[in-house]
Length: 240
Picture 1 (cartoon, one colour):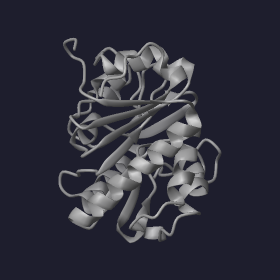
Picture 2 (cartoon, helix red, strand yellow):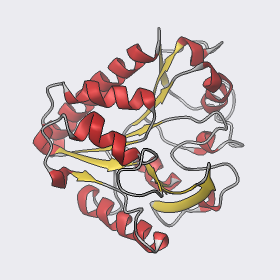
Picture 3 (tube, one colour):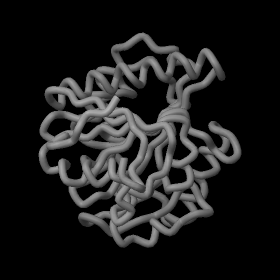
Picture 4 (cartoon, one colour):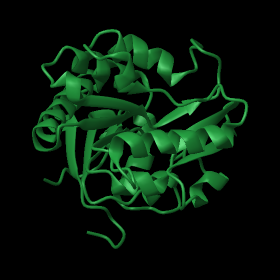
């Protein structure tokens, strides 16, 4: 293994649908184990078309739902119900389908006038449900063609945040963002990367190599699972 490479388990699956189903099954297993061990499972979810399919599949599985808490990895600053909001799709794919009470889902407060204060308030929410400092049970991450993950964006000041678990980033693709930061990602009990599509192949290779010149390559955690399709995997060698 090259210096800087991260130790991961990578599953290469035929297509995005297979990735979504495998991710749902993996999350369900983690949820059952966490609730059995600690009485609670705190799940942080990102956006994207494959993740929404993943969450629809998850909603149909047998989980200890009363012990599940759902938080957001990142969110665009947009009005309630806007198609740009991850929350809009999270509601459609998971919250409207699974037996979760309203208080078990914690939306990022991106409609607040003061985004910096709202980010601090979301950090308080994480501490309330996941301890001080907060330790999330599973964080689902995606990977952008530019190497970003969550809303940890290339060249953005949020990359330098070390003393807060939630930050503000952007503008990016026309929107400001709220996002989890590197410190809370590093503390997570499990990271699950869901990466699909040929446009991600180059960045997936750099992620696995621990390339710190891209934001995704700066995420440091010893418990990493990557589920990817053949298009995104490209020439990756599967290591188990």
